[in-house]
Image (cartoon, rainbow, N blue to C red; front, side):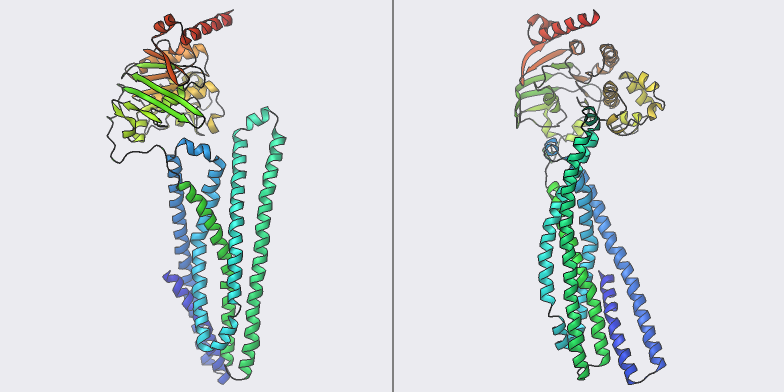
Length: 560
């Protein structure tokens, strides 16, 4: 701000030198006076330029630093939010707030504040000098100022409202584009390209219409502001000329007044632009603050206990009277379940019985509505969620892969994993033979969400990723559903050594996947209705036995 103040003071001093020069030349022409005043004007201009340069470097640089910190804070905050947040906000909306709105905030905090301060200080210095020279003429020149203020405030409010509507429309466009690009294969499969293009055109037309409304408002604002500025010039020329002819002011003072009026043109015009920036920035700031105000459901307590260092001897897990309620209804109802350390437990049940919800409680992807889950006898909610998750290898139903190489996807989440370790994990997951057929091997870029891989290959990459972590708890949530029976047997055989002594939880619709588990639990409508070993459940003759008989029949039919 110091550089800005010095720059404005030097700028305000220029007309005073011009006044002295005109008055000196009026009294009598002297070449020495011309050179002296010219040198002074050049020195003031150079000084003004230097301080103006540093003003912009410092203030614009600060706004970039704020943008950098705000972007990092916003991203860190978004990463930490719970899944219910992402069920309420569309991805395109979040992207729009993180990019377009963030840029508008930067413009407000950088150029907006800089020009607001500069124009205010310039106006104060200019008006102060004008009042000291001829207060009557200065007051007459400032007569349109209240009208300028009214116009700025009136237009500023409407610009804010319209820009806020535009930002919402931009979020809508971003969301639609993101959904269409992510689901482009489905769109093509159902031949809906034309329909989606038309739907996008409707949203795009609304967006253009909102921008045109804002452009019309801004287009009216600037000419009106310039007309009021022209009115002040007319007053100075008319009244100032009269006072010059009546010898109330000198010719130098009259020239100085006109020079100052010229200097006030930029502040008046810039004020309109600054108000526009400020209103846009405020609208965007409110949208960003709305995201930052969101609180994660899963948080660490102030002084969480420390889990023992990661090892492969498993961990004891227990569910005590666990209930989970969703808006659509109850997913788990009074579940009591023990998983001894180092054992392999399987969970089966029909679709929607609550299997995925049950295992999502272990890494604290969600917390139970009632009851609690313990890890080695300690309530999971007492631990830091990140520490719990660091000791769990979780392969969810919906596999997510990053737009990177195969090797990077397998090693994701494991710092410093060697090529041999990555290769070993891929071999255990039954993926090494597939990778050998890729032209670039582990350096093959698999595209966004693993676009170039089959469903079974994606699942095996996710299994390899979980194995590489050497977790105490391994959770496979229907992780073999996309592979054939022979590949499944090969993977389970390879995993048997890994699963030995490690707490493993399997979820599957296939009996062949779970039949060797130490204990099998059957979920029905969020409740455990059967439990026991494979042989015990077959003898019981319940849901599990029926599922086993159906799958035996299917295998026989396939063989025929």
